[in-house]
Length: 204
Image (cartoon, rainbow, N blue to C red; front, side):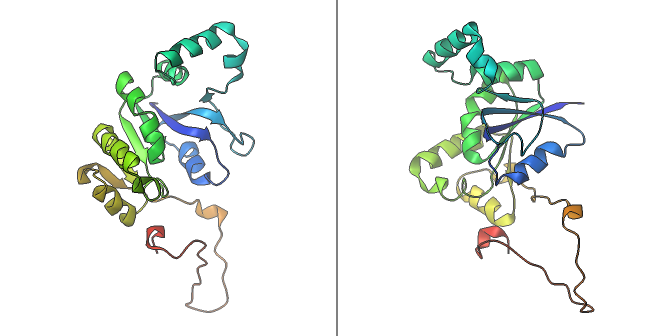
C-alpha cells in the first residue's frame, strides 16, 4: 500500500476535525503525519506522527547538534525531511495554503509531488497580503494539484493565479452515521440546520 504524508504545522487544532477525517479515512493509501508541533494528541489519536517536538530531539545530544547546524544552513525542516526519507511517501499533502508554502522547498528537494488543500482563511485573509500573494504564485507553480472545498474557493484560487487545470474541488466529507436523520413528523418536509456565517464562501 503506497504512503501519503500529511503536513500540518501543528497537529492538530481542536477545530480541525475535517483534517483528522481526511487523515484517518484513507482506503488505498497508508497515511503518516509530519508536523512542527503536537497539539491535542488525546483528541486526535493517530500513529505515526513525526514532530520536531518529539522527545528524541531534546534527549539525544547529537540530534540537538544536528538541529542547530541545519538551522544555521537554512534548513529548519531537516527533522521532517529525515522522517520523509524514512517513510518514502508517494506524495506530500499540505493542509492549508500557508502550510503548503512551508514545505514547498522540502517537496522539491525530495522530488515529492505536492498536493495542497485550501480551506478558507488561507484563501481569503492571507491572500489579501502582497507577500502571501507572491508566495502563493510560487506555490501554484510548484504544486502538482490544489484542492478547494467548493466552487467559490476554486474561482478564488484561479483569480489568485492558480492554473485552472490544477484546481480540484473535493468537498469536505461528513460521516453520515455520526448525524442520524431525525424525522420531524411533517410528511414531505425535511428541515436542515446550518451552522455557520451566511457568506458565499461557505457554499450556501
